[in-house]
Image (cartoon, rainbow, N blue to C red; front, side, top):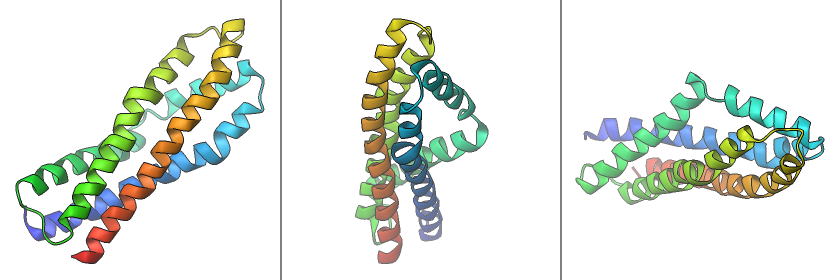
Length: 161
């Protein structure tokens, strides 16, 4: 990988990771707290609507595009194609891939699927909703920190280069 391509890729990864960290921060700080004040049936409906709406080209382009760039940067580091700051790029890539992509797929998506499958006005839904608010938000905090952390590492790598 040429140095120019590495720098552009690192810059794009910094932007993508920062955008994801910001999105997750808003959910952790505001959205989930607001949903927690709603009756379970309304909170579930609102969250299910978001979970369907967010699956669009713009979000998926940034979310999966940053994962792809991080994977390419990771492989590039192992092949020795990284300029100075490569260790920071390696760290940023790992933080994004594990802390955002991994956490999303292993924790948040299965919880979203369970929420979508429940009958919103049932007694089981009210119990699930309370657990969902707590656990989903906790894992979202991890994604927030990972997004901000990965973005910071990519920016530090750019500054080192």
